Image (cartoon, rainbow, N blue to C red):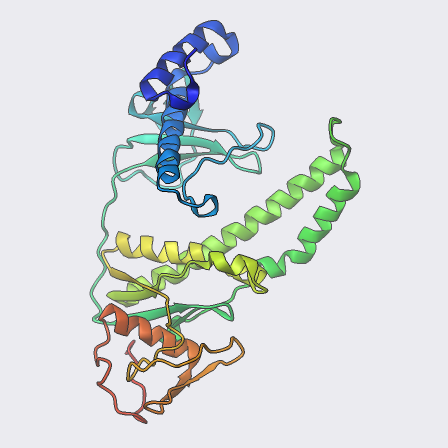
Length: 350
């Protein structure tokens, strides 16, 4: 048998054919999702080899395959165009499988592939890949700058569109801790089947965590839709909250779901044809949005007011950073030098 570490997709397909002939349990399943898994694995290995050749540190490699144990991994199957079809509102999969789908909305076009997967609650979902369609909104002539934070999830140049911290995870923390204590008390040693009480507490914990995740997604999408509806152009901080995972603000930053909210904003802007520009986050809290001067020292997190030593402008720290996003993205209608020191700050959302 050839070395599996050096096999390409074609060789792996041939090996899959041999495995299906020799293993009855593998032959029971359809070959389409099995081949798709092999192709995904081949692509991930190719990227891993490319990163190794570039001598990228292991901690900084992106997209490397991470494998879970079979008992801990939820099943997922990918079907390409020749592996499924839709007929009379039902999903027909390769292998004679017919699925009755509860449609959340009508498909805008013919799907090119579908992914059938199961979540932590045991619910099955179908995710279709369809061509994107732009749904343009009426023009408003307004722009907005967005800065991410921890005290507030998003601070903007418009007070009406600030996103306060919803604290969904904090509100559910007590109940989640109770379920986890129940699991810890009823856990059996490795190798023995878990009790009914343990499995019940495990389902309750998974259900609560899924509810919090859905609340965060819904809050982010509602806010993103309001921002995109009221503004033609958006300058948003390209913030990556990964480094906050090692800080004292890790739990609050994770509860804010900054990454998911930013993703929802970008997707909503693309869907409705808005101009969303990502701004590099370096030195956004040190620059003055009015004169462009940069502070000599980084501000402490406890300092919530920004005072420019060059022009004398005093403004809330996050509001200044939000306006810096507009200046860097080239969307500031007044420009960096368009306002004199001491002049009232204009409302960009008006």
